[in-house]
Amino acid sequence: MAAIDRKETDVADDADALRVRSLFLSDIHLGTKGCQAELLLDFLREVDADEIYLVGDIVDGWKLKSGWYWPQAHNDVVQKLLRKVRKGSRLIYVPGNHDEFLRDFLDLHFGGIEVHDQILHEGADGKRYLVIHGDQFDLVVRHAKWLALLGDGAYTAALFVNTHLNWARRRLGLTYWSLSAWAKLKVKNAVNFIGRFEELLAAEARRAGADGVICGHIHHAANREIEGLRYLNTGDWVESCTAIVEHYDGRMEVIRFAEMRAEASGARRVLPRPEPVAAVEPLSVPRQAAERTSSNARAVA
Image (cartoon, rainbow, N blue to C red):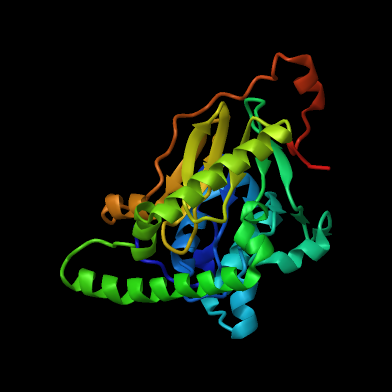
C-alpha cells in the first residue's frame, strides 16, 4: 500500500474502493492511545458501503472522563464517516458500554446518523440479524461496573506492554504478537467467558426472531454457527483491526485488515475486488418482498 499523505485532497474516497452492501464496525475506542485510527482510515479508504453500522464502543467515554486524548487521526476517522454519510451512506450507531452516554438519545437522528439500542438488519438474502453491542449480556459490566473499570485498566496495561514488546520484536525482524489476544485464548476463564457470551447472544437473536446476531464488545472477531443461528462478532480496532462486511449477494465476511495488509507486502490495493454480482432479484417469498424497504433494516421495538 502506498504511503499516506495527510492532505485533505488525499482523504477523498478511493474511486476504486471495494463496494459492499453493509459494513459493521465496533470497539474502535476513539480517545484512547490504543486505537488504531491510522489503520482504520486506510480501511475506510478501501471500502464503501450503502449502510454502515457502528456497533458500540466507537468513542471511549470512560477514558475521556479521566483525561482528554484526541489526536488528529481520531478526528479524521469521525470526519471520514461523516463524509460517507454526506455521500449517501446510511449510518446507524448502536452504543456500547464505553459510549453509553449516547443511550440517552435512542431512536433520534443527528445529521443523518441514527441511534438505536439494538436493531434488526435484513440481508440481501432475506436473513435477519440482530445488531447489538453485547455489553447487556456481560454480568460484570451490568452489576459490578467498578470491576469492569478495573478490568479495563488491566487491558490498557496489557496494551502498554504490547507496544514496547512489539517494538523490540520489530527490531528483531519478528511479526506483531498480542499479549491480551493470547491471554483470551489461553486463560481458561477468558475462554469460558467468550463461549458463554456467544451462547447468550445467539439465544437473544433467537428470542428476537432473527436468523443471527452481529455484535462486538469482547474484541474477538468471529463468524460461525451456534445451534442453527449465525454468530458474527466484528472484533475491534485496538488490536485485531477487523470488521464484518455484507456483500450484495447477502454473504457475510470477516475482514481481517491488519493481516491482509501485512500479506499484501506493500501492494496498492489490500482488499480483493469480488467478481461482479448481478442485480439481486426480488425474493420469491411474497411477505419478504412486500416488507422490503430501501433501508432493509428496522429498529427493534
